[in-house]
Amino acid sequence: MKTLSTFAPVALEHASRLINHGPTILVTSSDAKRRNVMAAAWSMPVEFTPPRIAVVIDKRTFTRELINASGTFGVIIPGAAALDLTYAVGSVSGREIDKFERFGIAAVAGPKLGLPLLEAGCSAWMECRLIPEPHTEDAYDTCFGEVIAAAADPRAFRHGHWELDSSNADLHTIHHLGAGNFVRAGDTIKARELP
Ligand SMILES: Cc1cc2nc3c(=O)[nH]c(=O)nc-3n(C[C@H](O)[C@H](O)[C@H](O)COP(=O)(O)O)c2cc1C
Image 1 (cartoon, rainbow, N blue to C red):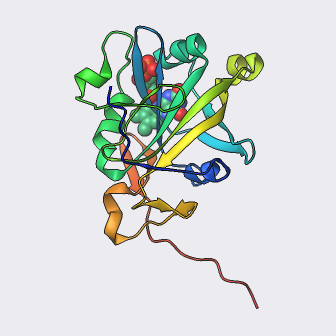
Image 2: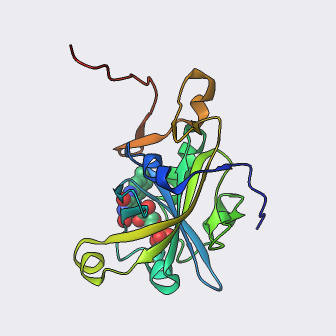
Image 3: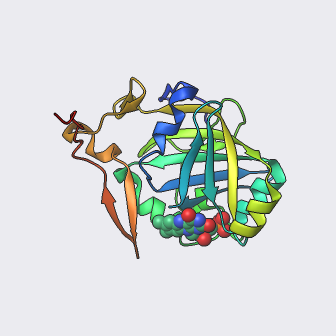
């Protein structure tokens, strides 16, 4: 795994903004022998400081098995350029195959937890430590994590927020409508104060 990152660090107090608008994400996981990546549409921030997030990960997935074993997981925010890849890794389990090999995915090693992370075609990533909550994990498949490190492509996320415009359309986040249909984020509109 390469260790060189082309992304710029994101201050942890801004990590919540990476998923605040509900993008489809990739969840990566690994143990001593295996690694994996899946798609997840259901995630959200739950605390600014320390930065905490929640992700719904079905207990039947291979990802859950690796997260339970390692106590860590990675979150990648794919850009529109990684749309086909996102759908592909969300449509097959890594229990039988290494999706990184199958789909030719280049992984970089996370700086704090060594998790496999993706940068090509993607806009940002986070390394998370699982906050064990056996009840929510069991009853609702909801896994909480504390964000330990975060980084983003500075063309799309800078000064602590997304800056999406026509110059970086390939990096715009993707949002699943169902059945392989997505909308791409864009058209930023600024709220103005009412008179
Ligand atoms: C766009 C998309 C969004 C998905 N969202 C979720 C999700 O939020 N939670 C979940 O458990 N599975 C979700 N899935 C399904 C998993 O990605 C899928 O079950 C995957 O094959 C699990 O892989 P694994 O067994 O290698 O961990 C989604 C799939 C797609 C294509």
